[in-house]
Image 1 (cartoon, rainbow, N blue to C red):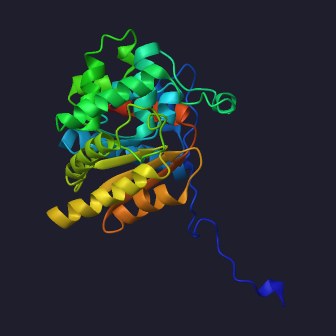
Image 2: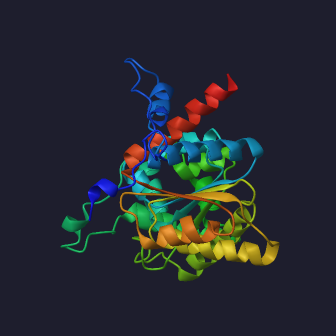
Image 3: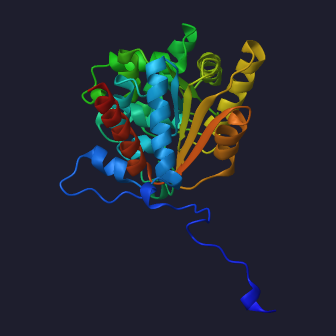
Length: 313
């Protein structure tokens, strides 16, 4: 080979994927949050986060659903207050929880503390044997079933009226007070409620099925601008969401052109397939964000609030 014969081109004529105008300088200190947010590079996940923020704010202004599906980890890392503020300010208009969420939300409302040392308590069989949690929640579920109520709706109402010392920490109670629908999707045997003598499979199944049907109604409204977030549920809620979407499409026709996003510390097959990719393949946008919830959710919710306030100023 004669390397002198290589065909070369000027960098000024070449297409480049990275440009200085998409890499702003860091803001001068002290800086506002928006200074920081706008200084993030215009690439990859920083650009995706801005895109998701814009789509969520557009959904809010258009009155489209902003559904947040969540596992219990967000509660266990101290994010209840952030989620409560988001639903009160309209950045979350519907919540879907797995069964573990109601355990930790109830304990935070009752005692201001939650989350056992599983490794230690499993050794002597005391794991999951908390009297107040198992007895009270199961009795409420039986009452909800007797009244043909949904699980999330009934628990939110009870916690809002409970008079518990720390009820202001309850996402379920705050959602009830704000008129935000909450659905709870239970897999029998997965939660520390299910081995208590007050547990009724009939009541749990009935109330959770009622909530699934309610979720189908919410999902049916996602088309043309809605948003669905999955935060930390790797199996239950991605599967529930997929069934809710196919049910809604079967009954209501085309539901497309909406946005989905998955937030987790490690990206998994099921959430990315069932939330991010498959639901949006006919038209829409899906995002995946990797990071610790205690950082990522405050970042998202602050971006929403600050951008929303600035645009309304």
